[in-house]
Length: 115
Image (cartoon, rainbow, N blue to C red; front, side):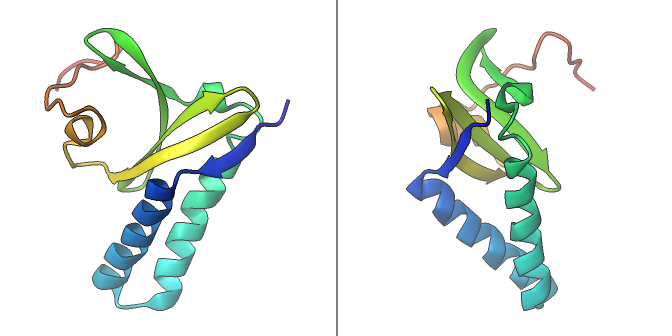
């Protein structure tokens, strides 16, 4: 099955912010356009097998969100039937658990180690 890819309104706003941040860093429209296009293409590649993304866990429980990393950003998405919806696209070094759930603590998946 190939899933339908959708973006929440806030994820679309996040992508606009990503574009702004890349443009601010590079001062180049083409670089900013390509960066966001490549990020969107990375998500499109998940259309056939969206459950291959990493599961986001909190307190040892699956939150219902999957994620993929792309350079300095993390795209969080959920699966509803034949649709996978990108919920947020956040800077990887942000406190994304607080942004997503209002909690600042997060727990690594069982197979990850603190370094």
